[in-house]
Length: 156
Image (tube, rainbow, N blue to C red; front, side, top):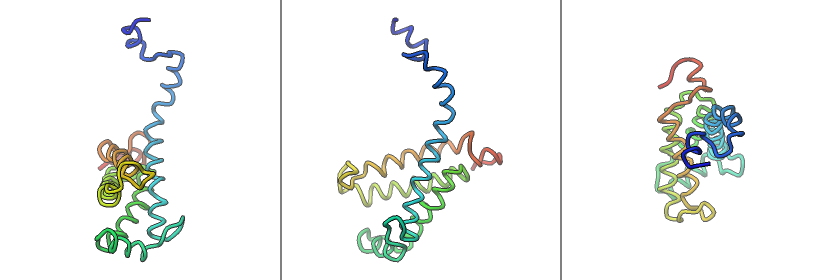
């Protein structure tokens, strides 16, 4: 098969095309839901001290002492992660929730993780930057077909 034939057939393994066509509409909402749900436990750690977190008071102290940020930023970060994560997963107010998460994750990548190098295993910025790019995509494109925003017919 020539290179031209491969380009026009759409796939190297054409027998898989029906599978791709069936699953393709589900991949975007899957990524949105997972991105949102991955944020929620981080908010729970900050706000409630669960899942190995320190709770709001200790997180506020950390933000002040180690990051030089006002204590209220810890509350704001926890709220974005918890409520914004739920909203993103549901596709409710998707663009604002995703935009807030993008900002939060970029601040985390640059303020907290940048000095530790690239790799997440060393505390680097790899992981928060990846999720910032994922949430940025939803801040730009919205919740999509399988979202509450679409269901109610309103996207900001």
